[in-house]
Image (cartoon, rainbow over all chains, first blue to last red; front, side, top):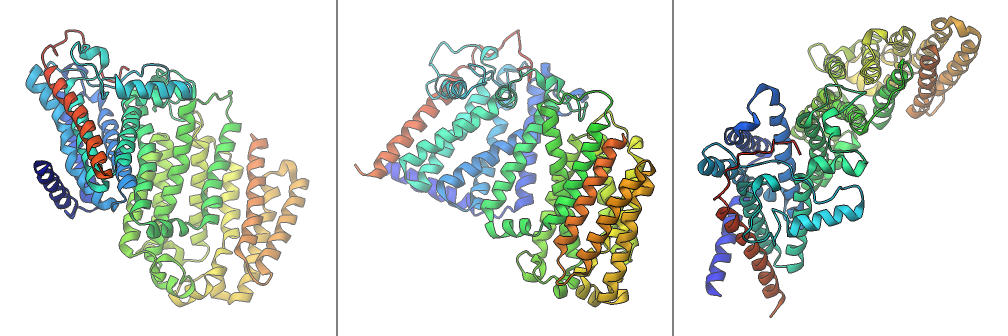
Length: 548
Length: 43
């Protein structure tokens, strides 16, 4: 027993030392990415026949990168869940296990001299179309499969039949042995070790059979990956690209869980700072309106498949994370003014530090750009334009938000871009075919309508030297001027669609009166104005549908 | 036997199975050369 005790003490000391190394978020990401790139280059050498290193297979590298980051994030979350250890310490420990993934191609090169064993995804024992089949496949995989605890000795089937070479099996078993010991040392609890092994097997099964997991439960064959998206982005096809997309979605979800586990209060503060009404109306609303216009103006019926749905989800994610980035940059630039009129915001209140803000912004920007790229080239292009507008709007030296009305035109441009981005999510739609009446309404009426948002910021803007209509005219007179702009904007409706002049004149007048009430009634509440604007947007979208 | 012993035994069983697999996998190095190869991602 004393040898075991000494071994145990050594393990504890080693884990303690590894866990305490200061790595940091970027150190972890870059360290992990470096190991993964190296692994895949070596795999390219050891698997010469697969042409991994050819330009045609360039997407293999992003695919494999996402695969390993998801795998290690999954391991970290499982260990954190079972041990309750701080997730930063768990992550650091797991990072030091990462070089194990270099072993398979090295073994392979040493033993086969470059001919290569087989590395690839596994076919599950049965099709994964029902819960019973999935459980059966997981059990088979964990016990008698190539990674199984009871994988039969002797009579090893040849590697090409099980799709997994010896190197990969050694890699996985080494990882599992290390992780089982980590769980034991941290918890000294049998149930947790068993649960940990079960969870690791579930995760391994998910990743090892990933192409089947993302297709068969949804009722399509695994070969649907080759066709990919048919409606949203026809370039989103082929195994490497589509699997990268699916893994990236998983990566973002696990990444969010990681940040939540790391610091619940900071995580909550970022979400609380999201300006829900502006996100829903100015971003999701615009995107949805554009998408509805895009779908309804398509000449032939659309038959979206599961990957089209995934890409639409990516489009919304891109807008969401782009918005989080924009809010973070805007808060950093506005900190002084917010101290006066918006002291509840995370920077003045101390809920988030400037560094938190910057890091959040960077990560959100990265996610937003990748998600946009997957959703299609034109969508990506429009998102970049949107980001440029957002940048010029809030960052010095331009900081266009300082100028009354011009700032609104800039914002309206951003909204319009988001709407057109929704429109081109139907891949056959062309930017130039976007209904010009709606674009005109967006670029002329919306700037007039948007001045209301400065009513709320009156005190801070005045202190910060931001010139807005309320600052220029004083709060009460300013409100009346803003109401006047609104009336003008709503009365423009019938002129854009002269074919329905009478009806639109009535609707526009009603909306104008409602708007005047919402702006001038006391006490002032911003949501009242948003309500009017939502009604206006719905009508504009409806016009787009019947207009096309 | 207390709970810690049970935990240790179970972890040892897992480790033994994992190590058995590592050794077995290492032994299967012989005969890895295959003329016919399955393409990666062909699934």
